[in-house]
Image (cartoon, rainbow, N blue to C red; front, side, top):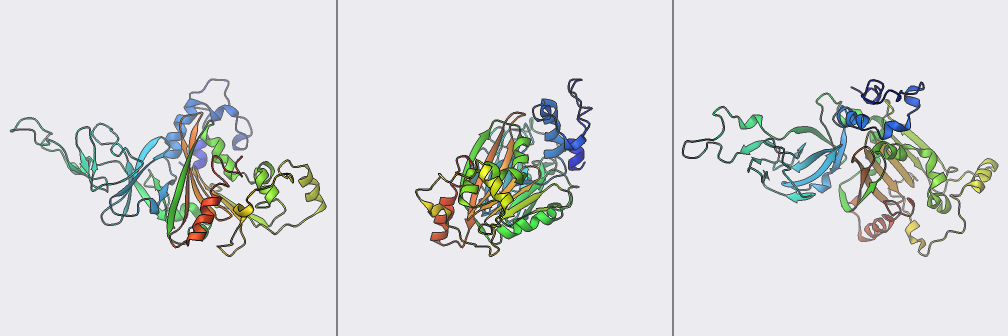
Length: 368
């Protein structure tokens, strides 16, 4: 099932009879599609367990053999590990026996994965290696003689890394990650061009359906109208040189602007004068946060990249960050921000990135 099919057949879902999809088809979404529990349940299965790649984290978050990270795809708790051979592995973080959560911490390091409930042990690739009292005690009890450890490992997902950014999918027939990303892969390659270093995290609860946020970072129309900070301080304006890139299927997108390339015109001045986002009375006590070094050599001051259905990568000046969208029911979702730099950053560059973390995020100056 492709991404359009996954979203389409709402007419035959178990929804009240008056909830018919508008005649406009995919171009017109009714408000109830954002809060209907039946639609949400179908999305979890058809989209998040469907033929899509989902962001799990950065390779830098599981740097050594034994390192692990817990996260989510949709509402499924997922475990990302670095095995002894250096390979990346993804699996459901649920014991194959009774579904108990295996790893409870957000990050950790372990030689094996151990379920505390009945002491079933797994290696870092998710293979079952030990079952307590498998043969019973003194010849009595135990598991059936034909019990095969190889058939009872953790549910494994396909995992792939692109420029140090790790994705996973439930489906064997999902296209290879680089093919699935298409032209938008160049936007990831542009930013993540050498080994990464995690600088910090920010998590916020959004009291809205996950699709409302999914649509927001791919909406280039609002950015320079809504965000006062962008327009006032010139990080991103409609008059600047800009562009947008989509993959062939229209699932993923990134857009960019180049600060300092304003092309003034009477039309733009008339519009700018009417926008609340241009606030000449707004000033900064410390304008140093606007200091920007063109570290990629292409003049791009802002790039916002979004892949279907729940991943965002941003470069805002020298602030670099991934955003992971996690549905938490029909009417709320979490957004996890992972700020990063490069392993070879000098101290001054790292200080600049840390300061510019305050540009975006749940309390960022751009966001407010």
